[in-house]
Amino acid sequence: CMLKTNICGIEFKNPVFLASGIMGETGSALKRIAKGGAGAVTTKSIGLNPNPGHKNPTIVEVYGGFLNAMGLPNPGVDEYLEEIEKVRDELNRMDVRIIGSIYGKDEEEFAEVAKKMERYVDIIELNISCPHAKGYGATIGQNPDLSYDVCKAVKKAVKIPVFAKLTPNVTDIIEIAQAVVDAGVDGLVAINTVRGMAIDIRAKKPILANKFGGLSGKAIKSIGIKVVWDLYENFDVPIIGVGGIMSGEDAIEYMMAGASAVQIGSGVYYRGYDIFKKVCDEIISFLKEENLTLEEIVGMAHE
Ligand code: RRO
Image 1 (cartoon, rainbow, N blue to C red):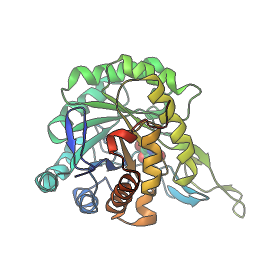
Image 2 (image 1 turned 90 degrees about the horizontal axis):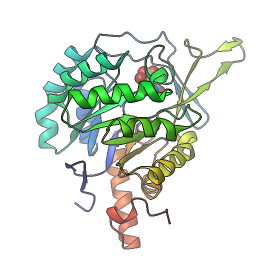
Image 3 (image 1 turned 60 degrees about the vertical axis):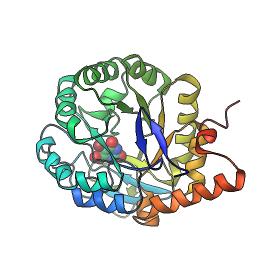
């Protein structure tokens, strides 16, 4: 209960959440993560219509993490909501909140999916930041005007808190964040994966079928820390930090940079489903050793 935290009026039993894209495609996978101790689970990004995703290979382990180009695979919002329905009561009993990640090709599609999702989740996370989905994600999240329009339309369409997930693959992330904050989002999630590529030198071609992908894992932690730091300096909305968090110490680093909560994706691969419980225990040990509260460490590294 030392880790209880309130973000936008929603109570979380702890601030260690599942990131979008990992174990979020089915109800049973979400349940497994909830049992691992997550304070909230974030769904795979869901669109209006079913999408098969990119051709294999879609993921490769590289130095310091993974490169992925899954290509937004998902069953479409109507079918996906049935998955959530199967586990919603059980997650509720475990006191685990649900963050619904969504994507769309334009503001109308985003708003339509958000409206369908609203009754099933606690927070909507707008994925305007997929690093390689043509016509989706990146093109929106790299353009302040498009980002503004999507956030504004979704804010108008739903009553629950709306967070925007930002891409680090931009020249000026503050300009994008300013646009989405101006549109009225309730919080920011940072960062999505960093564009990268790996080449098979024997086959003499890129490993991923999509050629390039998004880098996650340890290699991107310091990029995420800097982004969260800059967002905290510039805006007054809660920030969820994500990118390379493997341990309680990594989570605390993000919190001291300004994150009110964190999300873990690649870490599930390295430390198992129970990484959420482990990271919570590590945060508690640190707070006890330092005689600090969770509230005190958020933004603590700033002057
Ligand atoms: O599905 C993906 O390929 C994907 C998405 Br939508 C995203 O937002 N970030 C990522 O690394 N992969």
